[in-house]
Amino acid sequence: MDPATLVGIVIAFGALFAMITLEGSYVSSILLPAPMILVFVATIAVGVAGGTIRDAVLAFKALPRAFRGKTTPPTQIIDQVVGLAETARTSGLLSLEQEADNVNDPFLRGALQNIADGTDGDELRILLEDEISTRARADRSAAKFFNSLGGYAPTIGIVGTVVSLTHVLENLDTPDTLGPMIAAAFVATLWGLLSANFLWLPIGSRLKRLADIEVDRMTLLMEGALAVQSGSQPRLLGERLRAMVSDDALGKPAKAAKAGKGAQQNDDDTTLFEAA
Image (cartoon, rainbow, N blue to C red):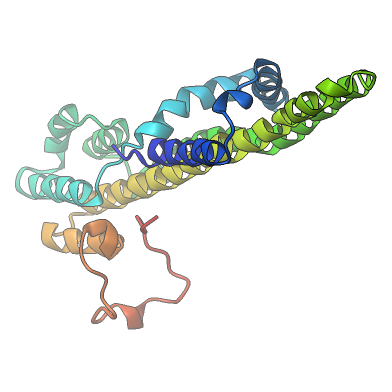
């Protein structure tokens, strides 16, 4: 579990409350129900209006993942694939069907089942790439939904402030209450900015990052599974997969240069599991 989102949000709100306290004010001065209801409810409502009900449902189902942030270390993936390669070399590709029953990951289990069934390598690559693409679209759709909420929230906060100021202008004959009323009017703008920058945008960015990590994981598994199908030697397969992962993700110190590697790769080559 990676609690970065939860820790970051708690620290952000903690800094806000610390500022309010140091300014000699009270936290209760910004906890006004009316502007908070407008900002949160209307923001979610227009977010739903900008897409489909299914988009909203899938986005909120993905919300717990943003706080858990559970990812599989690439070294664990590589060790698993190398073990499968050793099994395939000693017992044949048909033995992978039994191995598939012991695999929890649906993506890898499907790949192993197709290998055991004798699916052509090119067809299997197309199938796995399509599955990766579909998963990426679904995950990034959830991130896009929360990013859209981050765009709507500040403007809705301004709408709330305008409505409140209209009420202030209706009570100019009571100057003693104008100060508190004006201060309360700007709470809607405050919550619009807070919800966007303390909640919606960080959650959207987090989900997008997790989606990228998941694509990297599935790509690593795909390349490993295809190499197992082609009969790659386990040790060389392990080295190949490690070459696809950054040193930081492997838990190794970064090297200034890698012998025989830097000269052979173009500058625009990408590496899976780059450090965030």
